[in-house]
Image (cartoon, rainbow over all chains, first blue to last red; front, side, top):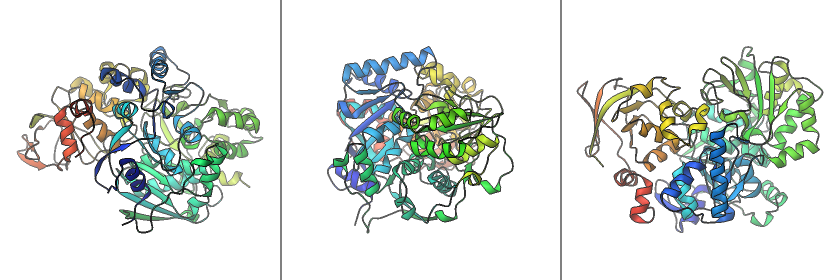
Length: 418
Length: 168
């Protein structure tokens, strides 16, 4: 019997062939936590007298959630991360460097890796053919110290996505469609593997958007095979030598297979307050929008900013709508600056915030007022997510977000393209 | 592990997220779990933390604990005194985090349990007795490793005891 991508990677890290449903102990390659979860990891390591990391270069602390800090309690928590980094040699990615998941794919993760992180969107790295999954602070504390984790080997659900994406439809719409179809718990505990010609034709940036949201269907990880696109990405990042081919065997066992006709999709919106509450742009009434947010580990990459800027160029945001743009990393910010994208956003009336999670986590940089609606390119729209349970969060692609910022209501991006 | 747990049921619906349990606006309290626990489940039931008593049991629908990886969510539920959560299904990271901190989660059809019912969970028999209604429900058996985590009092005690993860 052949293996799926996750069965291959876990087998390699356990040292024997593993099967779905088994509990195993696996070695890890990359371990990370962020300023919301690392303080608890560090507290537990101190309690266990295990303040050490298994591999300095691949044990990483990211300060991205409240970055820069908005209050003294958070500043004190962040100080704990800096002290731990100095003491153990763990790598510190400090204020302004960017969102953990974007930084991980830029500088750390390689095909075949097993990656664990104290953040649910750790599944993002799976687009590089890595088994990458989110866990809690104590799991990650033990992974920092021991370089291993306990795992239940997941069954794999296969998603075959076919056809050319119509104009105005992006990988964000594809993953929203899948979550809408299978539900917010449609892939609970499962590895989600995405393939098909639509995926083959996506850039790495667009692939990350898909794997980023595997957790929104309950998935343990999202995975994409490696190919020439992966190779070129790694070469650009100076890690061409770390490329390897990885894909599921033709006789691998999939618990479920779902085919998606991507060429029939239209721009989609997730309505409040669950990610599976999906509506097509042609089926909605006017929804006034008070704030548009373009950024995050889901859609804050250069490609996303280029799409948004192409729509906003020479135009103004609606006077009643705030527009907030947060590049996902410092490198993306710098490139966007060089390309003139930041200037386009500023001239359109946007507020640009420093790289990090921005308003997505509800701490700062755009908390909603009671009754307000935000259209965001982020991955999650739960009640209270953006700091106010009286607010309403709608999710969409950067193109839909940019069009909506101009019109002050949820708008179809197709009228602004080509 | 105590082979039995008894407590009053607090009923919640489907898709209770980690944002309902530990809202992002209290992010700054994550370093102070006792204080954060005063807001436990606030966005699902604003008065829950003042009503819940030691030993009580949370009863919910599908996909309890979806969302973020924040271990603070099961921790504040435990600090609030909750002895166990029974739901139709749980989100994966929340499930793992709960057992890692020694909080048992049970999967069962919860439709017939009402808020305020007195429940008695018998781990050996794999049964939940609704003493208010005089009915007996079954729950899906725990895998041996998850049972071991509860017996050991969580993953930290487990690792102290075995020096490793003892999955077999």
